[in-house]
Length: 611
Image 1 (spheres, rainbow, N blue to C red):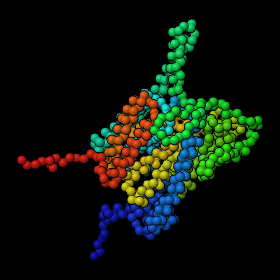
Image 2: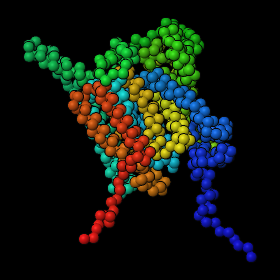
Image 3: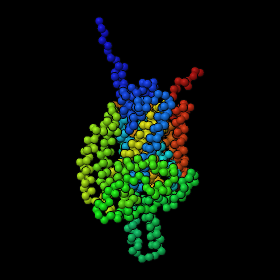
Image 4: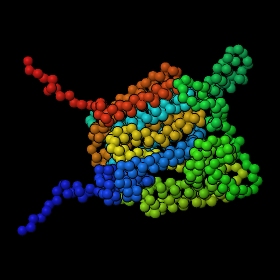
């Protein structure tokens, strides 16, 4: 009599083994078995972003010892340099001019543009990406608080160091208090019942909506106050002169000039009027001065015919190195310019340029008409293939299937491109040229996000390869690499004269991360039936992160009030040192020298003794 084997839970678990196993578990296997493991594990496919590093290491390079793994990592450090180069170039040449134009068109001031447009552009792409891989991410609270700490203290401190400026007093205090309240609300929601529900998630979303409403109302009140002051000044000018009237006119003029700086974003020149050497020093130096740019002065062209010089203008747009820059550059700068050539050409093809400092504001008729249909189609196809892809095949295998979505966009963009080509000319940009800044911003954000995501995947692989704790990597190295896009865009804007906008983004971005990012990811986990626990969200580093983050916000509020809201280099170094303090704590926790900061239940039985 034959016995029928009945499957148990362990058999069912092995049926889904290859769909659930972590790709980085391949490190535990012998070198000759790693390639077979990588080809069968699904996470080795969907766990990559652009380059399949583990597949290259195990199957293509066929690393067979530790030395070959070191060489493999060294080769991809070159790719790290290229990715950083691409993110920096896009932020400087494309992202910053587009942000200025859109902020000015929407009649925003520096602060509102920083807490809305910059914060959203730096955070929303990562939010969408984290939602798509929600099943593979733990320690959401710790990662998000680590991101917020890096942005507020390190990037914010770097802004204070590279350029000194006077903050918006009331706006800075209000934003810091909102950020403190948001972080306390998130911690309270998790700490009370060790989980988070939909009501708490909706509450955090409403807090962020209230924050946006308050910022918009603040700008409306500034505009309304300016309107009343200008009306009062006009009435005083019509009255007979007297010492009292002249004194009041002088007072009103000064107040109007002060408020006018906060009314609307101004287009400033990149180059300063008093350039100085950026040497390391603790001393606060005289801030750089940026002249306001006359927008209309760059619109003229020498061409008379409508399409004269069309192809010449198109070819010159791809010039990767300017002759004057090359002539004045040293040997190291020339090497840098040569290595940047592929990045410059790709960006020129993909991203429309709208820059009021360039001749004709960056308008190139033929190139821009091509970019009208090329840029959206490429973004849709690559975005769909890279972010919303199947877990069973590589991203490039999905391009033929997802190409249809890019073709759908051509139905709208190709007729629009033909219309603009027939209606515009090469003499000057059309009046609607600013609309191209939307495509500019969209392409810039997409490229910067892909560069930082690729860096994160690369360093995650390196962490597993060298046996570093997953929690330690995710709350230190990975959070920092995810914020490299924020670092590039915020510091670029600060160096170009938009310090207030940049510093506002270092507060508005973390508030968006704490309230919407963390709440949304936890909400998706809850909707998928995953049980959210305190330790799974916080881990070993969430406790110390929250304590340092709260203390750092309180200290930022303190020094801002004590220094009358004047940012100095010394406070920039102080802020960055607080993040360095967290790194020290994290290293000591990872080495087991100190225990994690966490809530522990005290056993009263050990204190009882018999009389």
